Length: 104
Image (cartoon, rainbow, N blue to C red; front, top):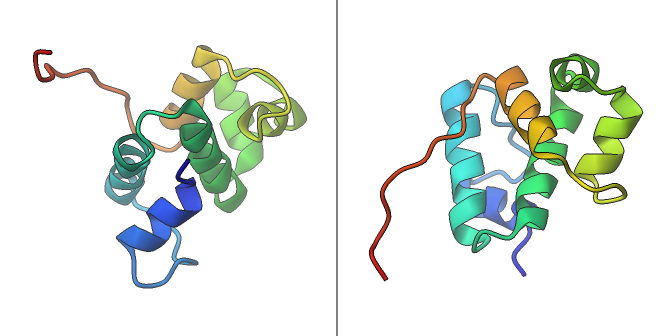
């Protein structure tokens, strides 16, 4: 399993560089989905990484949950709700989209 931290360091020269711009955040999350093979734990780890570097409390408000609950969901200590994912992404200024994929 590939971690979000490895995806981040593959995307930037400096693994401690924070994606702060919504375009950078979207590219990072997209890379986590692709490079992580769709693993929900990698995506949750990526959101947790971003929550740690952005305003966790405002992200929690956008999700409609207390900050400690948000952190537990993103860190895998509680089940991650889809509404939490959507709220976290909105707080980061990005949206989740769907596109036509390859036919199998």
